[in-house]
Image (cartoon, rainbow, N blue to C red; front, top):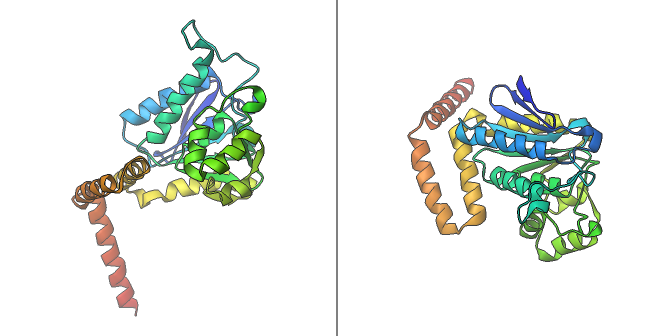
Length: 265
């Protein structure tokens, strides 16, 4: 494993092609900071510009994902018209880029994901949570409106009425309920969250990076566009992949396994 670090964000490259991002402010339950968002933005730029990794995993240090915005430190910067929301705007850019990243993304949630960090987790393709994890969007209790895309993600994923009840009440959503609502992909024991996320990352595509990348692009486009658009992309991607080494190797492997089974029969 190779890695790099900043004060508030750790970046490790596992097996050479799995990027593990750790929100690293355990003394403050990994509440987000300017430094964290800036480092995350730099990482996204590197991933966007280079060869896509097999997967990107996001976790929190100290067995806790994140409590969201840091209310103890001001979110302002500069003297622009929206300077009081400068930290949020930086985070919004990261969340938008994360959602569109042509790489399978996995949120590994232990403890809790609250406020803007819930939006960060919801922006990922797969969300693996510990059985004791919880989620929440208590913005109204702080005199604020939902941020980090939380209202948008919840409304699209569970509908306006369920999203409204959660956001208006600001209540805690236990992991089991979040899974029942379709907001969590998989529940595992709390101590197994990171291992489960890494195991899933390693399993993606059987090492077929091009197929994984185009699948992410297809899923993202399908979430935003029409069936006609999705079917058009399927044709283009299928044509491209059929001529590549990954599909050829997969076919040869399938034929070899089938032949071996016949010989054993």
